[in-house]
Image (cartoon, rainbow, N blue to C red; front, side, top):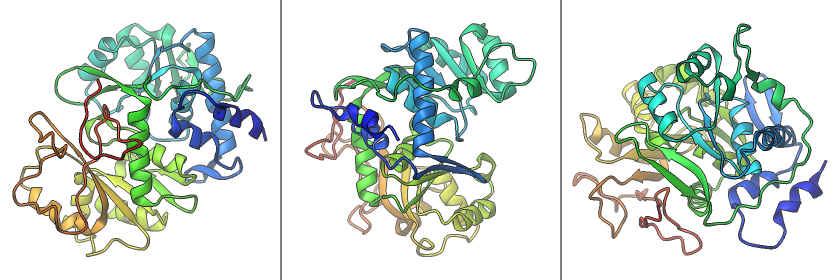
Length: 363
């Protein structure tokens, strides 16, 4: 249904955000998200996103308005993220587990105009900031008198056609979870670069089941989600309490028959130390290891033992990284050992169409 309306965003003109276009063009009846016994098709996901886009237009946030998503992985966050892009708003994804002081300071510094959060924590956050009139909450208690996300997502959307993003236009607002409180506008081409790199390295497709991790280093929340959705795969949110319980996480990956997992070192090292990491990953599982620099600490050398699990590496280069290769690794790491460790471009770089791996700052 409404395939013609979705394809309207593929009309000729300036290059569009390829990640969004691929998601809009997936088979409507295919499974997009699975959370426990709940299933959401691509058609239902896009309709929810379009309904949220209508709300942003109603609030006049459809021309670069800044929307903060403080949501755990689930059925709602993808619709909010895609709705921002359909409307032309700039999403800022923040982890609900951030310390309250850091979260409050980031939201104020970012100039956020609409807060989307959840539960009692969302109510407390909105009240601390005095933002009850510009907060939309998911799963809010009965005492919450403001707007609820469930009501917005159930509306019938006015249109499924989205804004036409240019390749050089910013499509994300990025703040790291740690370090200096500085924001960065991310162009559409950089987002496309990351998602395209991961999707191609993992050979992700419609038969895959992609684990969606609550948070990745460097504030890269949701990139694994976008890899899955733009591949036509089914995305499964990893329960937050599983990341600190290796046995539970290992069972979850196996029982859900997960085939793609993008993980930071912590959960993978926990599986290793618990003796749950075999020399090779189980079944068809392909892994991307997402690591920040410098790679140090007592567990650093154990990361070499994770290489057989990793189809690709994403390495975030800190200050002083070698500009020629885009990243630096400690001397104990031999990048010539297969599988080869690879750096992918930073959020402010452009690797399309020439697929260069170096860092090129366009902030």
